[in-house]
Image (cartoon, rainbow, N blue to C red; front, side, top):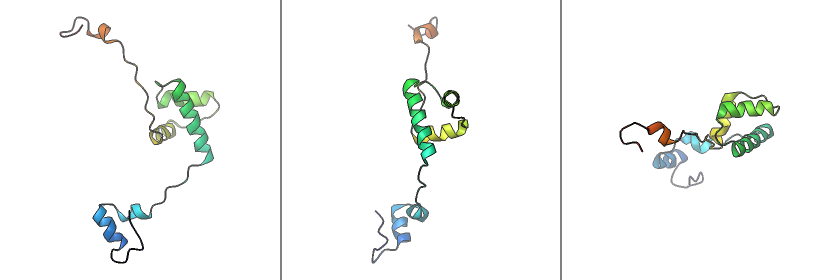
Amino acid sequence: MIDSEHPDLSVSRQCRLLGVPRSTFYHAPDPVSDEELEIMQLIDRCHLKYPFYGSRRIRGWLEDQGHPINRKRVQRLMRTMTIVARIQYARCEFLCRGLAGGP
């Protein structure tokens, strides 16, 4: 997309044309450590078994598995993995009885 060897356009000009900050061109993401990969695999395993668990319950599950970890770290890793807890709702017929427009 951005060619640093372009003869006519500088990197800053190319970034400006694309609407991208110049720092984005030079930024190299940090590699993921082996420890974080292991924790991410455990989070994925927990999420597949219990898709309704949020970050608090996953943190507790990880602690039970022998991996003490901060909840905010679990939240960050879940966000990185695009994992979201599936919320369990009560059945509508029990909630809507007696309300206007309910079944």
